[in-house]
Image: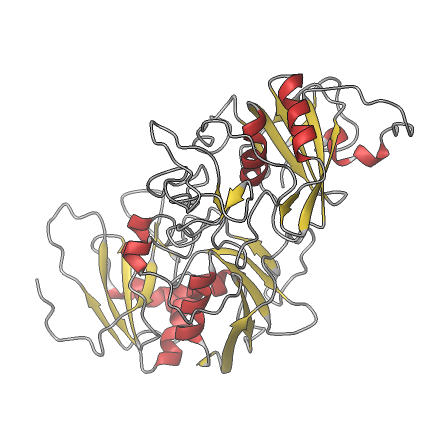
Length: 466
């Protein structure tokens, strides 16, 4: 995290998180000493088996009153500060949520009145948000829904079927919609709606199940990560319903057999982004050539395994499997890979993810590797030599044949075409190196970012249809 917040008042000597991350260093309240009520709560999340984000905290707190600001910090475990618009809603939230499990059997809440009188938020992201100032950082805060009084004893969230699967909020309808039925009819939204991070939360058709404040509904998705229709998913109408035989694993993929000298996080991203959104990538220091990849949902992992397992490139056979982990935690101090790049990277919000919303996802054609690549988003008037140079600089074999699609009009803003290689291994190497390579734009200081994917064509025809 960057500098997220600090307490109001004098310059804070304790670092970017002020007194929040140093809460354990503050004077302790003596046993039996009454707490001083405050409109700011300190939440400690015990046994945080799943990620705790602004969306999760906002969802469980909103039924008790208007939430102004949220800050999450992780210096001493996982803690969050929540600022309400008054002491009464803060007190209701403290009494209602104290000791509750956000997810069944984990993420238990221990809540105290905090000492700061106001939270300062400098960036609206997954770990801090100012609901009074939506212009700090991202697009817009979540919309308010009608208040619902939830029980504090059952789990606040239905345990995800692997992280990012089937976690939908139980709150009333909004915008005139009456939602939230006991069988999952209605829900917060009648149709999927991207959240403030540009990710579909899968909040359609939610309802109560198992008596929880948050229920598992028809829509796929979960707080922050999304499901089908979110990262790695596309909409259910675009990608189809999950197959009955889909393994009930999380969204973390194990990758074995990588060439340790040739592969890095960005190159893994370049390959796997064809099958779903990428959230985080982590190389394992104790196992050379092995990495873990958190994708947008389990369907994305399934597609990657089905299409890429046992493929060979850079002289190594890559093998893919399912991890038992629900998600990848942040790595504060990653080590350097042989090429000098970090062993851990976070791709949440990366614009090169291709399944951010249903419209984008519907444009992706899921194909197994082939020796022909389709390239697009390149400058108009692109020549073959410029394309070849991308692969030469990446130290991979250049395509043996290039076909530029004819321009449909003089005003066309970009170009596209096909690249043919001698075999699938060469095409794979070209894709991991050349995907998202910058191509100079003669008409602007900003380059085009070339995008590659596998083509369904078996060979490049001599004549392309105009």
